[in-house]
Length: 297
Image (cartoon, rainbow, N blue to C red; front, side):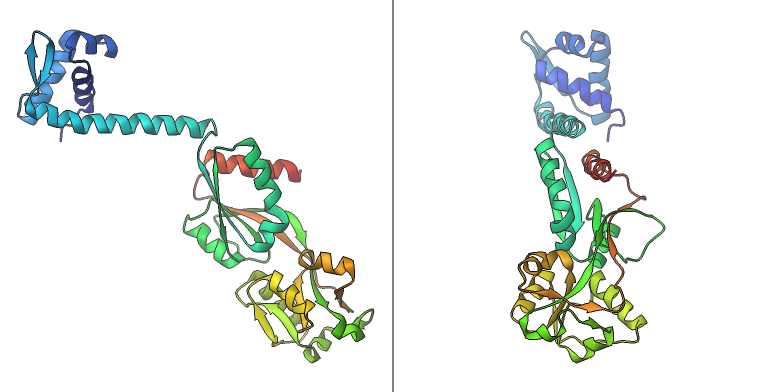
């Protein structure tokens, strides 16, 4: 392979313009320098690339073959520069986000709407999954940042900041009306059919850890993948559902569901934005994070 790629640059312009004089003018170098570059390239490749004619420089068969490949390369370089310029001006690019149903619905969605209004040319990809899965995606460089719920396992290369508070609660329908307006002990949950998230979520891990500190190990009647489904099961009186309060607000406000009250407070958690400091963020991802941070201030 020819080490000096400048020779190919000269070759491309001579071949495109069919003239050493015009190529020298476009490249802002002397005609002898253009001729010397072509001769050096021919020596390195071991073949003649051009023939001089009355109408200018004409390709040999070898030169024509080489030019077709070099031309493609230059087109890709120009396309790359154009795309880079678009990215730098936020007219193009992509932001990859990891988020759960909860963090997407009750925090991230308004920011994505505002970001799209500001930068409509940027593609936003949201990979949906619980907190542990989102952190795995971050480690694998499949997302730029994650919007997750605490608690989560911190790592040395993680940076994160809280953006919203989460209140977990237990909700029930009319079948369990005997528990309404009563102050319960968490041990009373052992007598009640429970509906909870599957064990791989941060929400389930958090509630299990809290109840374990209270000396309880619960065995739910139903373990579901989404909080929306927990609310639907509770509405059908299949048990008492443990959910983030926002998911049930509509039904709590209307009185269809009610919250159970306990003699201990289940501490609130946080929604956090987490990034991996070992990798630089794209300009587009940085702008979205900047939008979130400025709003939280």
